[in-house]
Image (cartoon, rainbow, N blue to C red; front, top):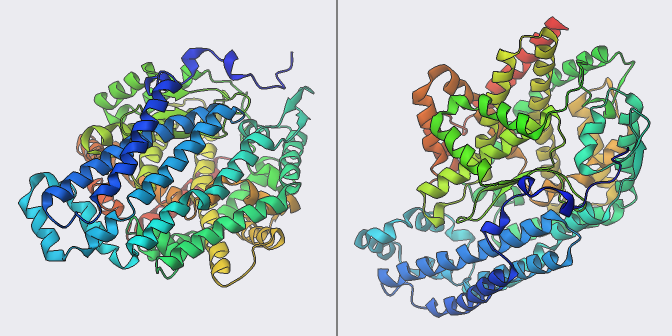
Length: 599
C-alpha cells in the first residue's frame, strides 16, 4: 500500500505530539491571558515621564515590563506552535495574528522606555545601580542601552517604529504561508515505482536515494514549483531586504549588516573573516566533489547528486525510540545530570515527532520562559533524523538550563551561542558513532556523513551568508532585486562554492527562493561560526573530561547575561579571532584526506 499521502494530525498518536496543553489547557485560558496582557500593555504607558525620578520607579517599570512580555511571549509561542501543527487551521492563524498585533501594541506602549532611560544622565543612572541590589539585575541591560545610545531615536519616533513592526514583519508571514500551506510539489515514483508526494520533509530523503532518476525527479519537481512562483517570491524577498536596509538607515547604522550584528556586539570582522577563510579553503570542497563523482561512478556531478550517500550500505530505518537511545549514548560525555534532565523532558513530551498535512517543515526548538523548551520535528526514520534530535535537544537543554539559572530578562540566548549548544551535541554523537562502529563500510559511511554535515553547516551556510551580504549591499546601493538578478547572483555563488567540475543545473539558481532563514537576515552565518566553536568545545570535553564538561555546562546557564563572544570564553573559545574557523577548515581537510585514503 502506498503512503503517498501524509497523515492528518488527528491520526498521529498523542505520545508523539508535544504536550502543548501544559501551556494552555484550551483557548479560554489563552483568551484570559490575552485580555490581561492587553490591559497591562495599556497600563505600562503610565510609567512614561517617571523613570528618572528614582531607582524605585525605574525598578518598578522594569518589573512591569518583564511581566508584560512574559505573558506576551507565552501567548505568541502557544499560538505559533498551534499554527505550526497545521498551517491550514484558520483558528490558530487568527490567534497567531492577534498575538503579533498585541506584540506591536505592547512595543508601541513601551516605546518611550529606552529613550527615556537614555535621557537620564549617565552618572545618575549608575548611581541608581549603586543604591539598589534589585536594580543591579538589570545592569547589563542598562549598559547595553548606553552602548547603543546613538541608535535609539526619540520617543515619538520609537513609537512610530513600534506601531509599524506588525507591518514590517509581513514578508516573513507571507513567505511562511506560501511555503508551508500553499505551495505543492506534486508526486514522483520512488525506487519501487510507487507514487509519493514530494514534501519539504521528504525532499532530502529523495535526494539521498541511490536511484539517480528519483533524485533528478524530486529536484525538478521542487524547483519547478518555486519557478512557478518566482516573481511573487522575489518581490517578497526584495521587500524583506528593503525593510532591513531602511530600518538600519533610520537607526543610523552604516549598513544592514552592522545593524544586525550590533545587538550581539559582534564586530563585522567576525562575519567577514568567516567568508574570507571559507573562500580560501573552497578547494577542499572541490576535492570532495571529485571523491563524490568517483564514488557514485558518475561522468559529472549534478546538483541533485550532492546529497546522495557516497557509501551504499543497506538502508536501515531507525525507529524514533531507537533514535532516542542513540542520542542518549552519544551525549553521555555531558554527564549524568544532563542525561537525567533530558530524559525528564522526553517523558514530559517536549517533542512533536512526525510530519502531518499542513505541519511546518523542518525542525526547531521553541518555547516561552515558563514553558517546556519544545521541539518540532518531521521525523522520517533516517539516520540524519537522529542527528536532528541531538541538534534540537541541544537547543532545548540550553534553554532549560538558562531558564533555571537566569531571570526572565536574560532567559533567552543569542543565535550566536545557541548554535554552539546544538552542534556540540551533533559532534559528540557523530564521534561516538564513528568510534564504536565495528563494520568498516559503516564506519566509512559515517565518516562521509560527518564530512557532509560539515559541508552543509559550514560551507553551505557561509554561501548563504555571502548571498545575504550581496543582496543587502545591492539594495543599499539602489539595485532592484528582481528574480533574474537574485537567481544570477545565486548561480555565481553556487558555481564558486561547488567548483568547475560540478554541473550547474539551471534550476539550482532558484534555490535562494526556498530558504526560510533569508527572512531573518544575517542569521545563517551563526551556524558556521557555531559549528566551528562547537568543534573546539566537543574536543575539549572528550579530551579533558570533567573540567571541560563543567565549564560547558556553566556556559549553558548564562543565557544573555553578557555578550556572546564573552560567554563563549567561559567554554574556552574566542570567536573574535579567525583561529577557530581556520582550525575547523583544517579538520575538514583532514577528514577529506582520510576519506580519500579509504575509498
